[in-house]
Image 1 (cartoon, rainbow, N blue to C red):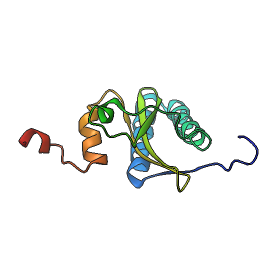
Image 2: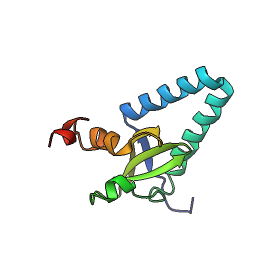
Image 3: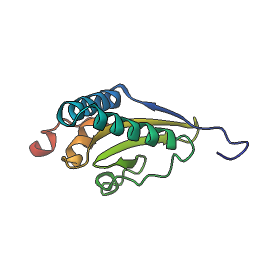
Image 4: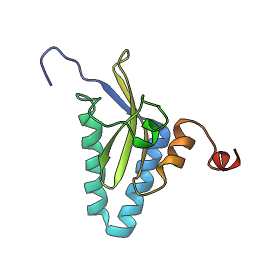
Amino acid sequence: MSAGKASWRVAFTLRAEEDIKDIVSFIADRDGTGSAETLLNGFIQSRDGLRDLPDRGRIPPELKKVNILSYREIQVPPYRIVYQASQAAREVHIHVVADGRRNFTELLQERLLNIPPDASARQ
């Protein structure tokens, strides 16, 4: 961190915290606690990296396609961490932590845009 620049505040939403707990629990059951701990450390390092470089991530392609440019994402493969940075408040809010192999368009619609999963099929 450069002298004179304060770090940004980074926080997980409750839903993102649940995402991490579910993922880590699943990995612990499937691959053991060592693998789960390694993954959790990856999530923590990614979160901590946003304190100094909140704009380092890319705009999620699913959102860029519909001209929603206020969210960014970083990855802890195969997981994607979707967040929003507020310049005015110097805060980062992590909204989604999910396996990047799942249908991210539907997940982002539901989580960030509050569109129920079946709504787009009904329109």
